[in-house]
Length: 326
Image 1 (tube, helix red, strand yellow):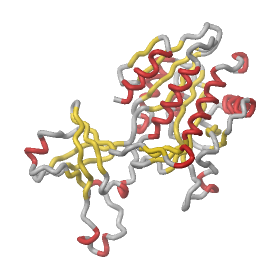
Image 2 (cartoon, one colour; image 1 turned 45 degrees about the horizontal axis):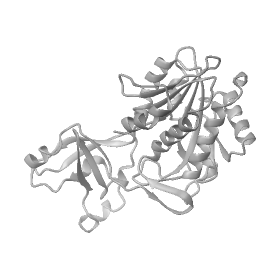
Image 3 (cartoon, helix red, strand yellow; image 1 turned 135 degrees about the vertical axis):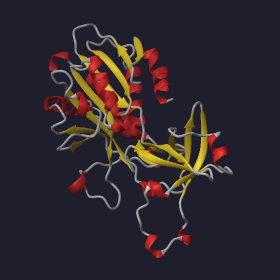
Image 4 (cartoon, helix red, strand yellow; image 1 turned 90 degrees about the horizontal axis):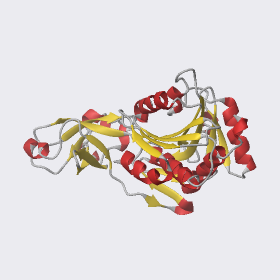
């Protein structure tokens, strides 16, 4: 389980690791008492599917958990998480040869798809899986050219990797702030876990590390979506979901430390963990650092390892800043 792996990785670098009722992992690093309560969060969940029905022939039917383009699902290899076991299957649909012409360019709904376990019937299928089991993509992480990584769920495993790197780099540093490194749950369902964690932590400042759409490929418009590219640095966000002074401070730190960065304007709520955090208690100063990502929520997302390094560098610089600047 990803949250347990995060807890195991970060435990040697902090003073205490706890898991709350909803499943968030909160790793606490005590400061010297003269600083702020700083929450640094990345989400551990990923888009997925859930078993909803098993038919008489043993085919598994499902619905999405989070935002998934169902047109990319056919013929994908998947993992069904049943208790402590993984059961493999492939998502099927009617092949092109058997489709009517009217079906060639249609949008496929989940009701028209199924998962083939290779079983002979319902009885055999029900020995392997059950209604309510979660389903995730089965892919193999791969490093391609220019130190880019291809994998499922880089949204937001990349953010968790950044947080662990920052905790590692700060392990032997003297800090003013109390730091709370959080692997949140249920971000894809409305940032529910982050809200619970923030209500417990009551941070003065919260920074989310997430992904954003890179638009440096055919068919997308920078005029509409912003000019964000893979490999050109960590993204500092501006907008109503962001504390303007905090965003300005991150920008200044990036320039001061020669950290390559990009700027993104989001004129509405960001779709990240900072949405509910901003409104906790009497309000929280929030910021969002993002890693450019191609093909978000697909089985093969693409991100730059260099952008992840830059995100870690900027976050580390923030944690070591002059405390009087907040």
